[in-house]
Image (cartoon, rainbow, N blue to C red; front, side):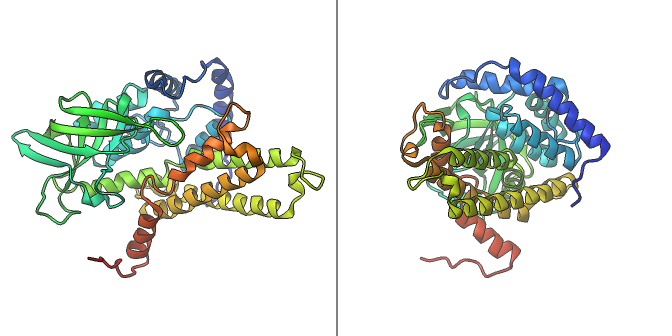
Length: 396
């Protein structure tokens, strides 16, 4: 790929930098981590600023309200906003990065008209209702049922790790509509309004003390058939479309944050005295580790370029998405290990110290190889669907 900037792309970057320099100083302080109504208001206000400035949905097609930017412009936008430490999409991420793109590809005209503009304006927040307590990493083993009753489905079951359910307006929900079908064949993708009677949200607290995940209890919840995305029992294929966005392009800001974390780690190492004299940066092994991880991050960025280009060309980057997700999550954990090594004893506790965010980041990365499909699942996908290897034995 040739990603050298054209004059038009350079002008786009300069306009974006100027806008960020003007708007970021005017933003209010970020709300407390557990104040979810305030966090929703903060995140959706930022989304509205992006919309008003013409930067909302930078990777969405123009005919669906997005910027319709080229792959290079998308990368410029994401890189510049991350480098400027602009707010992340936050509570908007499921709608903007998963549900919205899925509706663009698979939704009806009515569904697109009802949801896409509101997602772009920051007026509608989504959560993801895929994982279940009894399914583990085998998502296709989900048990939440949806029984057809006239123009509605009656849904019963439980979901877990439901991102931002406590402040969401809608949920992208996978349900089983044909219990007799093979497990991949009897699944349907539904749009669930979160204010529907019978929906109960129970927040879950993570190891770092945050509560962005919830358990979702569904008790005789009636969802209109018109809220089905794709055909009945074709939800697994639709979910693969959602996963391709989740795994292939939704980690872009995280890769740039990985660069930032490496730079912070190097800066700390350069000024931290070593036990035998000099600084930690004098250690050749440390410098070698930094070099190796920097090369991995650069390689991940190149893979992002490929995935974004495929998405822009109308292709679903399934193979690249799994490769990226597998490699990125493992690299990010190694970056956290390196940062902890440099911090030394300060890495043993999350506190008010200046570098405490690096400690929290390391603890948070423990979930990365589990979230959005475990590393073991990604390896199976690549082995069976890309390399054509025999399926994993099913032990009884």
